[in-house]
Image 1 (cartoon, one colour):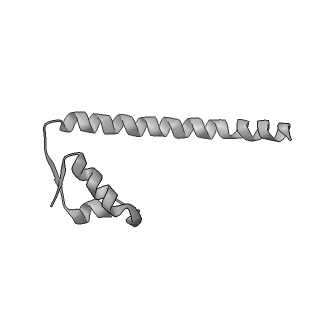
Image 2 (cartoon, rainbow, N blue to C red):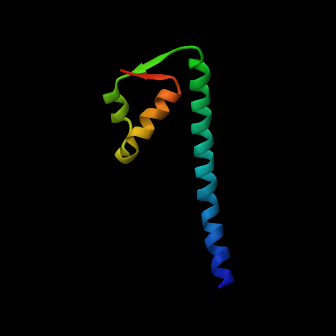
Image 3 (tube, one colour):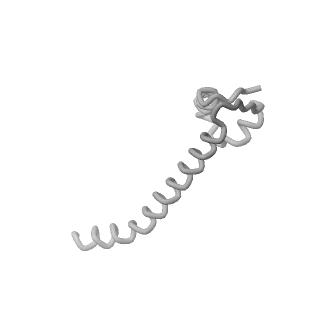
Amino acid sequence: MRGNNIKHNMARQPQERKQAGDLHAIAHQLTRIADTMQGQGMQVTREDALKAWPLRMYEDEYLNALQTLGIELL
């Protein structure tokens, strides 16, 4: 039983490292965008914002998060 757990964990490690690397890259890009936009306003139509968001059940939370970030919805 223990041997199976070791093989399973060893197989997951490269994938988890890749996911962690992907998340780090995304966070880095978001930080760069935020730094670039600091002090600037951004506007987006509600329709365009929702086109970029496939999770309809969290639609209101997504739109609220955009507004919290200072993005004006038109």
